[in-house]
Length: 327
Figure: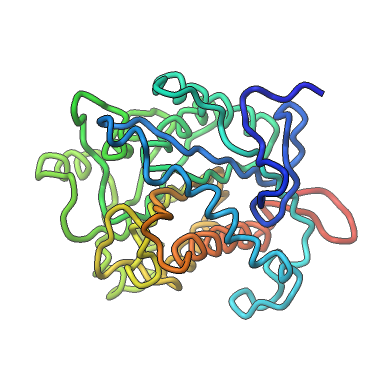
């Protein structure tokens, strides 16, 4: 069988996400959830071309297998097993095939692979990579209906450009705001200082972004913040690991004190899944070389699992164990 040149499957002997089956041909993909690694985005300079987050997809995969033996066990966070007794088909599609130095080509390749996954009816779960990688992912949703993007992050990522680059990790949400199929956004976990100046903040608010500071989340609580997220039938979640508080996510590009706690993050992810259908998700900005005992990769794997679990509990994915239709 000829290998699908669009993807690089996870090599035998290396872990897939949750020990899921490998996909070697996107045209025959049969899955509820498709795991996809996108190691590289669009760098601002030569230093960024060797992204510190490029090894994160494999690191998250490796930590996810801790949970594989327990997927049918009782989970106190869910009040049942994580997948609610449903048969959930998770398939790992490996990483997008990329060419060194061809940033525009790699971006187009990412969009093409996500399009192929969506065409097969699976929900893309994207493992980055830095926060530039969601831009080509978002593009795959053109002509598929409107969606609201919920960003968990300590920064708003609203720069027009840096060093002449308009699709880098600080421009993600500005680029999203220019896509007609993005009907709104909420940005949760904001704190301290980042790349934004007053002009970027003003532009984001003028667009209609719902901005929630981390301190506000701590004070008002998850339920109040969920109510502020624009209503939609379809949600995409982009999750920058630096949204999380430093003790549970030390291995990120820009650690920041006062971040989102584990249960706040889990409850936000699960609450969004209860508000509407999850059409896509990415987790980005993990830096394994800065991690401590793999705790960042581990918590990101577990939070991703929690989102998939809530999708199963709400009937968005999977089928009853005794048979029946998916969904």
